[in-house]
Image (cartoon, rainbow, N blue to C red; front, side, top):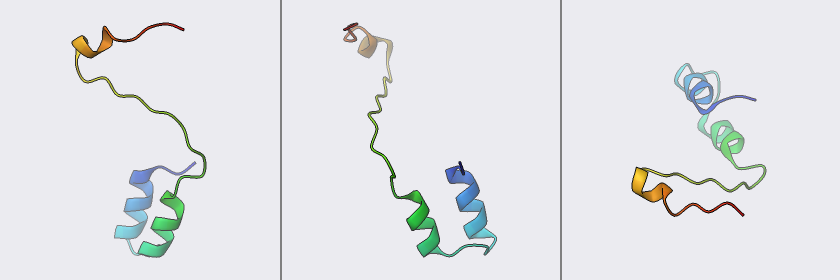
Length: 48
């Protein structure tokens, strides 16, 4: 699996064009992601 930084490096180096970048950055599968930025936010987590 290629990472975002690798795709951006390939674009910068001229090895791929913007259309290929966009095509490969399109989500293939949706996932849930959560981000907690403070310790206070963690208090709202509950185990289910």
